[in-house]
Image (cartoon, rainbow, N blue to C red; front, top):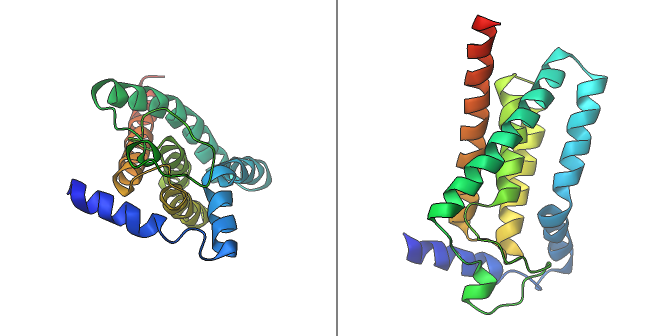
Length: 173
């Protein structure tokens, strides 16, 4: 599995610098789309209905849980980033913290799943953004595909814990 993880990373990473527009799109996705996503989530929460407000609140609570979850995971498993292992030049700034799981992907998954849990009509947009960021983080050379999958799972688990806690709290408060 690890060999296919590395092989898939190298296959995706080799696409860089072949199509300048694609490079720009992936750099934007890897570095800046996370900010656009939060701006959009806040805008939707204030512009649209109750679902979006609740989804934004679930997002914020889930982000706190995800930070703790990633911290615990990285205590027990520390994978170096691909550019460290293979001495390659990523398309974005080098970050030295562990590669697994992808924090950007975890954050994007938290937003996407929070809006999905509330059945917001905007959930598919956030799902597309999640996939874009995940692919982009591999494309620019800062994550392996399994880091992305791990980030998606960490995001889902964080939202599920927050959702369960919210429902549990509602019974007693």
